[in-house]
Image (tube, one colour):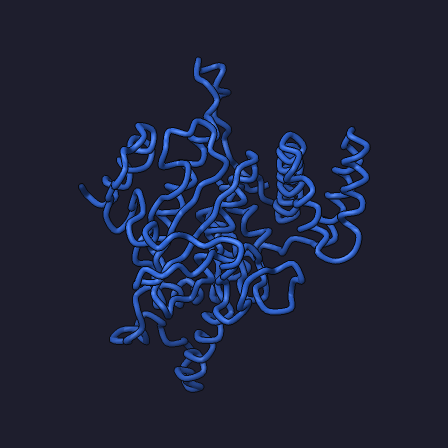
Length: 354
């Protein structure tokens, strides 16, 4: 077995998020997970065809092709990464498999068998019958805090087990050294609030790199002294032409990590003119007719924009002047809680070099 340092959390996200639009790969040298969109793949194939020389044994270096290109830096980086995957697939990179829908359904069945409350158990059995079973199942659990928390832990364990089985089949032994238990160090387990702040920091550091993101702000209960916040709410300003796909992926990652400890995460969207747009779509596949339960007013008009404006709409004053801006500069319009300053704003200021 080959030992490899891997972030299993990243692999879980890739395992659940892979679709025909987006393919994930595991880098066998670094242990990192990379993803390539179908659009990038098509663009790369087009470059290959345009630069193909039947008289040359060596393909043209992509770096040479992209020199002087008017493509933005982020798009060039995506193409270079896709080219590396193409050239070293099978030796350095292997594809991460998609989650099996049927396995996910069986997870719900297995979990229901462990529920002791007979009334809740019957409701869950009814919920998973027919279409949108996953959504109805989660809607029922939402009213039972302890059981919902237990479900997310159960689901995480099942998914990690399948990932470990896949890694074993590839001859890989993941190295993810667990830190000593907090009790052994004389420390307390991190609170839900501390964990949410850590997830927000990770989100900001990833989202600020996306082309089209112009501002990221923190709103909601984390901007207050609320000791037990239920979710992490972020307001992201995006350009009118931004592809929301990668941002929605980060939103699902935020939400998925938060759900693992029975909390939530939402990414609200605004345009540069200060108009509220909606939220990032919570689904891996976004488009009209895919899900009956989708309450977006214009599903699919702008991919991965969930404009459920009849359900929730942020006040214009909040959009224009959110309580705490996190990027491209740190701006606080409220009294900042000590943990927010310490765990979030200080690292972000250091990132900005200030």
